[in-house]
Amino acid sequence: MRNILLSTAVLIGSSFGAFAETIEVEMLNKNEAGDRMVFSQELIRAEVGDVIRFVPTDKSHNAQSVKNALPENQEAFKGKMNGEVEYTVTETGLTAVICLPHQVMGMVALVVVGDDFSNAEQILDARIPGKGKAKIEALVEEARAAAPVADTTADQNS
Ligand SMILES: [Cu+2]
Image (cartoon, rainbow, N blue to C red; front, side, top):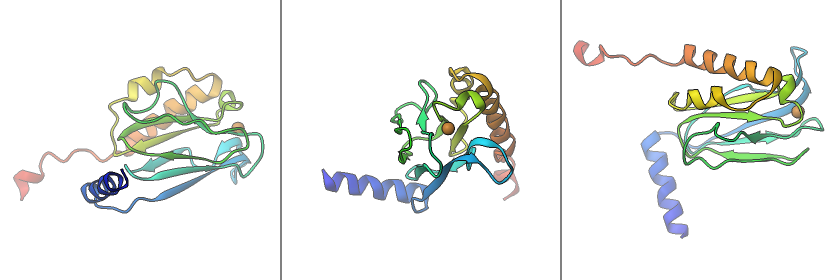
């Protein structure tokens, strides 16, 4: 089993040409801009193989995925209140992340992997209440706007 895991890791590493990273995201009562109840990063760019670690810097928060708002075959996650939790990225696509008690106040984040927006509609249809919904919509839009446009002229010019 261990060998299988190791070779899978090698395959992932070689096909994406980068070392897996750990990305730390803090759960905060207030960020530097003065926004209350927020994740320190709201648009989280990651690659397959990366680990996103949600850290309870302030109390009374958690981090978890939302039903039907993550890539197919990607394992969901749910951190405990005041608990650190890691989300290991295995699939490309979008993942909505919420803090359960504060999603209504907009404490949400969007994980973007591989500039794959194929599940954007599911993310936008996910059941997220209050300001969380509007922020997820804004984050999807922001991520899309910043995504590199497929360069169809590359072959012709070379
Ligand atoms: Cu919270």
